[in-house]
Image (cartoon, rainbow, N blue to C red; front, side, top):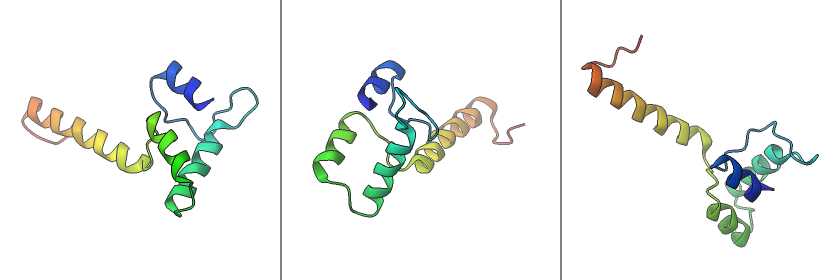
Amino acid sequence: LLVKFQQREGHSNVPGSYIEDDIKLGIWLDTQRQLKKKGKLDQSNEKRLDDVGVVWDVLSEQWEKNYGLLVKFQQKEGHSNVP
């Protein structure tokens, strides 16, 4: 289901509450992230998830994306005082 989601949506960042075909895909992916964080995710499964573009640290990814937007804003406007 994750591959199907990724192919349809263009990313693998499944919302935590997302359900597809009566399967709580978002919760399942959150569980995989927690297993990896604890060092308990099987390496072959981790590679498979890497191959479909799973973001392991969602908050860090979001921070980097927002920082990039701030840099673009600063370059365009000459300041970082976002209204």
